[in-house]
Length: 279
Image (cartoon, rainbow, N blue to C red; front, top):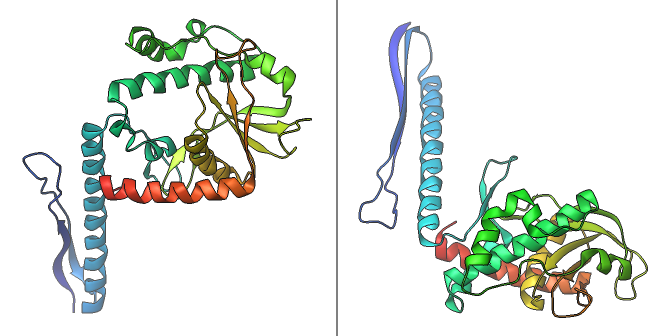
């Protein structure tokens, strides 16, 4: 028997926003069919499908609300949108440093982060062009320059000598890093390549990160994830600074065993981050 039917699916929820008023989103789909000969089972199957669509949209709204709450609470958290699963994933450094403001003010964290961005940009520019230039000659770091030069910490801007470092520690197949995605985090390694003729390192594919002031623990935690994403069994910190006359310090090498250990530390950091922010 043919008949006219109207079916739909709806999902509602209450999302805590951290403000005085919670969100109460509601999503629904409704369809009308004339002269429909579907069985009750087919109708129920369609209702389930429409409900799943509505529920999926509700989950998206929840994620959006969580991200906005996190942005309000902790402006230094950075997210990357993974093009494969379309999920916003917190950066490796945001997870690593989620509790850093227990010891350092947010203003100081911002200045340190911008100083790091400047060092990264100068090295990246050299890898791309072969030219070692001052920070002011690189267009896309103007905001970082302003933050550092006007900040109360008075951090130096043009530190280190990457070309001189490479004379002492050659790197073959050196390329700039691209954003890497893991299951629930993402990040941007500075560079990849193969150390050539180093006493300290194996001649294998390696992930490199540039630091003004290395921190063996924090850097190891960070590199463990970058290397994991690339399948590399060696990570190296290149210290570009003004603490030595040559503009660099001895590189810090992390082997496969140490990277596994630091990876376990990151896993705990990730669990703590999720408990704190719900994502």
